[in-house]
Length: 273
Ligand SMILES: C[S@@+](CC[C@H](N)C(=O)[O-])C[C@H]1O[C@@H](n2cnc3c(N)ncnc32)[C@H](O)[C@@H]1O
Image (cartoon, rainbow, N blue to C red; front, side, top):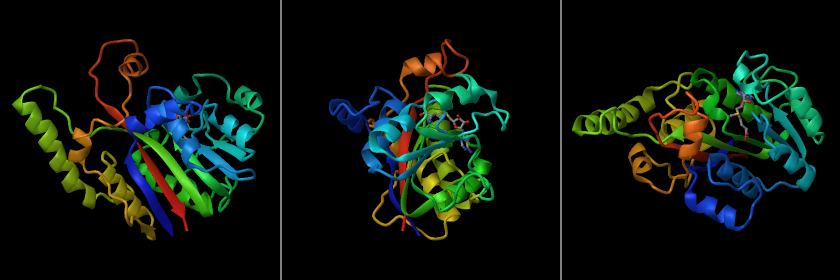
């Protein structure tokens, strides 16, 4: 059985606390929240088996291996086998593996429970940072089913997932924009969520995520976990968002003025009982 412990937006307050406490990797942005969040919430201990799904070029896995004595894996093909060249843009994955000798890199993708290279019933902690939102929605059922099998009983999954804050003015900043954007999207999300099958989920809101998880895992509990709706999410000013500088310089088209949409980040913690 899976118990959901948290499904909520990451908060600015939390990020400031990480900064004050000088938690490693704390910085003013989404990853600057997410990496310290992983360190603060996974309760790493010596000998634990830990994996970052989609670890890419992050230094966090090596940090965890060195500082907590965990056996740390990264499962990521860096887009090589899957043909997404974008993910190998920062350098050779083989050289990265040499640079981080305490981490075992598995050059595969999560999502095929029959892949013999990825151990099942093995990990104490499975985590991800800014990865899940890059997985096509149609593949999400297989990816979560697979991760559910990779996790040991008693183990925990902690995912930090980026998500555009739902509800916004639609194209024009006037009454028409408000009606089409805010109210229109709200009705659309609310009505489409219960009908979306797990294989083609609606993942644009936290409630959409809740609905998807309930359809994916027969035995899952949300007891005591309140999940924000689209409306509450839209007015919450405490959500960590992507800074303008990143949107300007990293989002395509790079280094060009573009419409700024608030990209937030949320956390999902699930324990296998
Ligand atoms: C934005 S990067 C992750 C950033 C990284 N976690 C960090 O903190 O810097 C997304 C990564 O997810 C990987 N990825 C996408 N789908 C995956 C899957 N199904 N299994 C494992 N990795 C996947 C991509 O190859 C890419 O390297």
